[in-house]
Image (cartoon, rainbow, N blue to C red; front, side):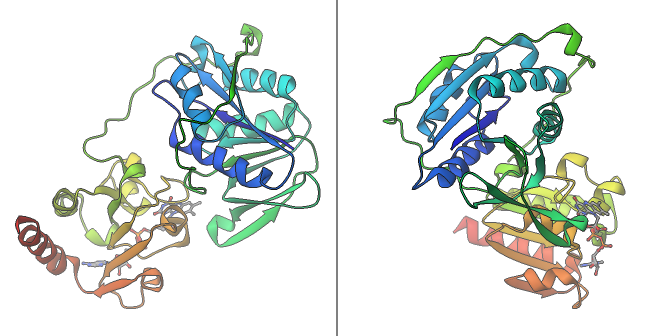
Length: 327
Ligand SMILES: Cc1cc2nc3c(=O)[nH]c(=O)nc-3n(C[C@H](O)[C@H](O)[C@H](O)COP(=O)(O)OP(=O)(O)OC[C@H]3O[C@@H](n4cnc5c(N)ncnc54)[C@H](O)[C@@H]3O)c2cc1C
């Protein structure tokens, strides 16, 4: 079985979600005859190609083009299509961000096969066939799906797999692949890219996340969470209700339609625990919930729950943590 992992935005090295997909590929070929190939798309991708080998790729195809730097779905689709036709994999795994998901479903249409978006786990069936799981009904249920055609395509949600430990002693073949990206296939044009401003720890990479919800009552109250996060070296997240209210930026939203996080510790403040929110943080190792409603569904997930008004609890927590840190 040949598995092709597609990695984009690889200028500064292989992005972690791509390393996760290589690990997924290795799991799927383990104990079978099979290889894991990686297509690294972008510009100046030499480091990312070496990283791909170190994280478990057998073969790497470097695909460089200036159109593969921005979020240009048409350009990426043409490039991935060309690589898939060259490599002829049985399985194509893309990172389930906006770009990867857009490319996955359009690629499936082109190749007359199927794609599973928002995939969160994969298991082997008979032969080369796979079963993919994904949340359905807004995260209220999990469906297991198979793809009838070949290649079987999936856009996999970040943090669904753990990357393998980096091994710089691994060897793998790195081949440069020239693909032509024709202007006739370019139906959209990227006019401008605005980089999201990140101050402090990036939400997706944070070991501790403090998230606030509608229960905070006001956007200004997010400052209290920012203070708590600063003391703990944490990133601040938010529920969709808080984002919709304009209290937090959309980049801070955790959940099904927001960011996927998998921190060691997730502290939820004034968040009820809707399934769509849990869909973004369910992989957190330890969960602490502060909510004044003892019936809040989030308590079911909490290792430690505090039933109280957060305005009383959070300042005490900040004070205590400052004392502990100064020791
Ligand atoms: C298709 C779809 C996608 C969605 N995607 C997402 C997503 O990605 N992320 C997401 O978060 N949501 C998402 N949602 C929305 C989700 O269903 C919930 O509506 C949302 O998560 C609720 O946010 P909340 O918990 O902050 O607000 P609420 O449900 O209103 O909960 C507020 C909580 O604060 C508590 N509270 C109030 N005052 C205090 C106080 N003083 N101290 C302590 N606790 C207090 C209350 O008891 C309550 O439990 C999605 C919905 C749909 C339909």
